[in-house]
Amino acid sequence: MAMGADRYASRADTLIFVGCLALSFAAMSVPDTVREPMGRVLRQTVLAPFLALQEASEELRTSRARFDAVAAQRDSATLEAAFLPELRRENDRLRSLLSLGQRLSWGYAPAELLHQAEPTNALTVVVSAGRNRGIQPLSGVVSPEGLVGVVQSVDARTSIVLTWAHPDFRASAMAEDGSVFGIVAPHGAAGPGVWLLELGGVAYRRVVPEGTRILTSGLGGVLPRGIPLGTVIGVASEAEGWERTYLVRPAVHPAAVSHVMVLTASRADIRNAFETGNAREDRR
Amino acid sequence: MRRSDKYRYLVVLAGLVALHFSVRSRLGDDRVAPDFLLLALLMYTVRSQPGRSAAAGFVVGVLRDALTPASFGAGALAHTVVGYLSAWGKAVFFAENMFVSGCLFFAGTWVRNLILVLASGTLTGEVLGWQLLVWSPLQSLSTALTGILVLWLFGRWMMVRITTA
Image 1 (cartoon, each protein chain N blue to C red):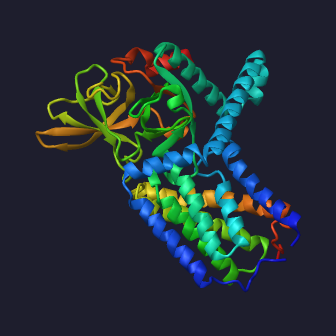
Image 2 (cartoon, rainbow over the protein chains, first blue to last red):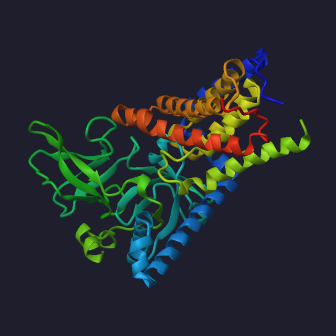
């Protein structure tokens, strides 16, 4: 039997289609307070086995990468000939993550990022840790390089993370030496500054040189002080005599991250947990 | 149609869903790797009526929206439209051969991404352009090639008569 070339949409087909469209528009228009519980129910029921499968796959991939790393250390010649650059970077990221965990020492939960296929994947991501590991909404999500985002909502075994690229993301920030404070937000999706952050609300008389590292300031109490956000690369705009807005190159891109730490405890200052760029280069 | 054929067909679809959540993350960049879940939906629509295809698309879209809340509702809309148009278009316009099926998979993926990004409104400017003109075509191509491979391997089980002309 072949596909029916004489099959057309009946009235019932059209009604179902229109009904589904109406439900879709309704889903788009419901407020976050409604859509989040709906999503949570789906993630904890229908999608739970699939997320578990994806998590197991990620763990398998990590285990294999680490096994390859150990094998490569035993045979440096084979290492250079056969070790794939991507696995090398993965191994390096995992090592960085382990050292970040040692420096944080407490109050964190490791998790895998479960990337999805949609174009909006970089804006909100699912991580494989939820209430079972003590995650709470607004917990900071970090990688060894810096801040990835904040937890938006928490399920039993997974959480949704709002990354710094999401239009709603904001973080209280400061220069590394504490001389300048401001608010960091996504720069936008147009122009040459795409996928960059911007540091706004900086007083006009305060000049932030290029290369200055920007960290979370801890003001507001949501994120602890000292998580790297990025590096200043120039002035984005300025209001004459009033304030300047600086472009900031993010410390980490969500799409390039596979493992993160979710901060589960309220802490005041974790500057010492993150390496400077120079220190990381020295370690390599 | 034998009963065993139906089960084989369902096994292939289930296999695609399993591949989506297990293997896909190892196939490179998320923006380019084939979308097995959408492929399973498109293969379902190939032999289903438009109404059922739209409903299946809606269910798949809602489930995916639960995993990417940044575009909640937009995924349901996109998958509904793609499911309906795929089933309707396949019945009305298309002949049955490997190339046309590949084109259907390509167009389905690209249109899904188009509706998704426009309806969600989360991507604008250059990012939108790159998404629609670079990343989406690449993902559509990888999905189409995967679909052709699946049809080549399991075409008989999928009840699709494949010709190469």
